[in-house]
Amino acid sequence: MTLPSRDDFRDPRRTLPVLAALCLLVALAFPMWTISVHAVQYPDTVLRLQLYAYPHIGGDYAEMARLNKYIGFYYPDPVLWGPNYTPEPTAVDVPEWSLGPVAFLGVALSSLVVAFAPDETRLRRGLRWQFAGTVVVFGVLLADIQYRLYQAGHSLDPEAPVMGVSGFTPPLWGKYEVANITSYSRFGLGAYLAMVSVGLLVVAFYYRHESLRFTDLAARLRRAPGALRQRLGSARGHRRDADSAHSGGE
Image 1 (cartoon, rainbow, N blue to C red):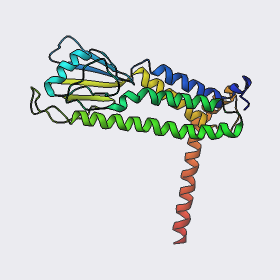
Image 2 (image 1 turned 120 degrees about the vertical axis):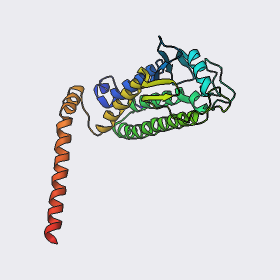
Image 3 (image 1 turned 180 degrees about the vertical axis):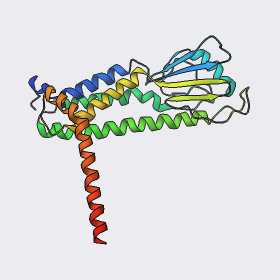
Image 4 (image 1 turned 90 degrees about the vertical axis):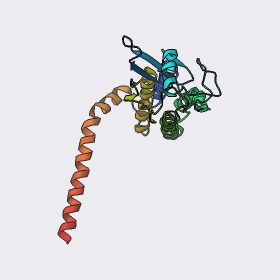
């Protein structure tokens, strides 16, 4: 099998997957999700949490655990990987959290395999499957996270000191209030790096049939908004013509 030469990597279709892989690897070192918490119990302090792609919570996680205990809301139990906190016996089991790095490393490795495809045909085919696989992996991850957030917020401990708290679903992004605790969820640097990685793979997939240089790609991307508007305008024009023809026929 003949590997691509150094000159072949001037083609964005090979370079962008390599950059995407690097972004995913670096992303594992940073939080995926951050939460800022305002509570009356801490009037002069904003508690902050950082959640990673693997079972680790940074920041004021011990203080937040004490606050959450009042309403019976507990950090999940990763089951397969010992976290940096002690899971409560009634915590929701989330074994897939332990597999987060596997998903990131799998997408990164497949990106590198595609980048080193030995010929044009396999490069195009690899970019197509890489794009589809990436969408599936991260789509499943997001859906699973949202489901687990719903499950945790609707599985409150009935023996908690504060009774009568309704079930809730912490959002991936936004503000939510539970009892006298107000929280703000935001994406962390790790999530933004993952988004950049997906964006790079989308660009490589979109231009999979064209052998370009980065100067050509930059020019294409600058023209992309105008080309998209032109295409949408043309589609609307065709639709109006079809409607007029249909009305005239009647």
